[in-house]
Length: 563
Image 1 (cartoon, rainbow, N blue to C red):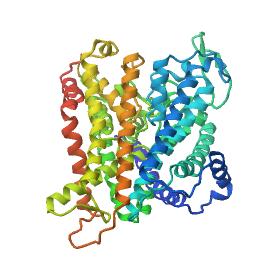
Image 2: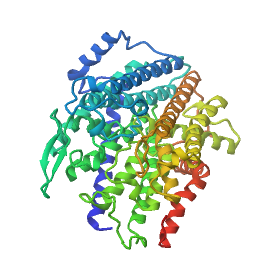
Image 3: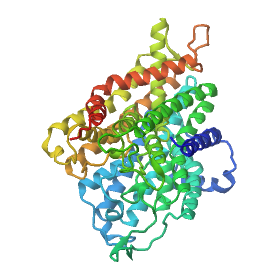
Image 4: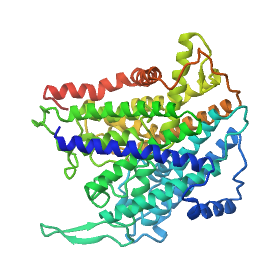
């Protein structure tokens, strides 16, 4: 690897290491209801939202009430996005005169953005009007991210509180997440991106003369405002079909760096927010370290794979499908960061990665999007594995497992198992069905192990609420639109609801006194056990499928063979 590429990686992770703890502590103050530097300018927005919604911001909710409010809010958001697509042709802010979206694609897109997945079976610039992009998709980018944050806050309170029947107020958590965190950061990033050349206007597409003398339509529109929150909220849905490989979404090396940084910034910061809320900051640093080690391991494996000679192409460095403006390193770093963070945006085609680098991206998603993961979602997903690790450690030493003073018993572990296994089952069952049904196989552009990887990636991306695509799969068919929508719903809510149930169960418990036999969760030993639990669960579940896909393709590539 050239020294310049290594320097870029070091600067990226250095910036993340400095900014994440600072932002995490700021968010802890926001969610604890304490005054911050933003309150003089923004608190009036919070008060207006409560007044218009008839919300008592100090009223506490039981976990079931919290879950009910969350589900209803997301259902209403889904219906709004779905209907808006069906009638966009008759609404303003549609200078291109784009038609109404077919019902199955509208269904898939509404579910996708409501679940923070942002899987896109469409080309944004030729399918969605400016009004739909702004009022439906961009709004969901904010509130779906805020929903993930709210679930993490509820779980943190459940762990921190003692003999409490409540875990907070969903409406308060949602509002504060948007007003004090997502909105200010998105405004700042959008302004910077506009300065770098990202388009932000309401003009119709421009017709330009190409260097060959022909004509080409250059799509325009309010892109920067959506791109800023798509990265910060770990949404990932591109304004343009090419996503962040499009020069009007990602025009310069600085915009590329900032967008990559935004992908991991909030997920990493929320680890430290959690540590402060449960008064276990050292434990939070251990979790952040585990996430970082897993991320760096995947990045190292991807880099090694990409810089190996490819006998099929006869090249040492494969630039096919990469973002040639930014180089191989930035393309690979983006692929690892975006799949680790449940983001889904791309600046290069993942299907063009070497088999093992593509396999790393796929495995990041299969782990449950817990290597930093989505905003809020990554941390509460990681906490499920933390609880499982503590439970297994307790069994090994023959004492009741405890986590931060709370006993972990059958009810909590049952919820943990449901939340971990349900998305895994969706991935394997969905991919298995797609492998045998002609209506699904007709959408494949590649045969053999690469074709299998395309199917595995699609259902993993949907169930993991990631949203990135492997390319080569025509997913805009009724079969994929419907089955992937179901996968997204299960992957989102069959994790959220058990997490809230765990929060309610733990909140009601008394705190146990720390003894000499208490298993410490802020040690290197705990970090090793947590990594082992994560990898073993992932390996046992998906190793056979990965062997038939990217692993087999890697060995065939070494023999110079393709399908």
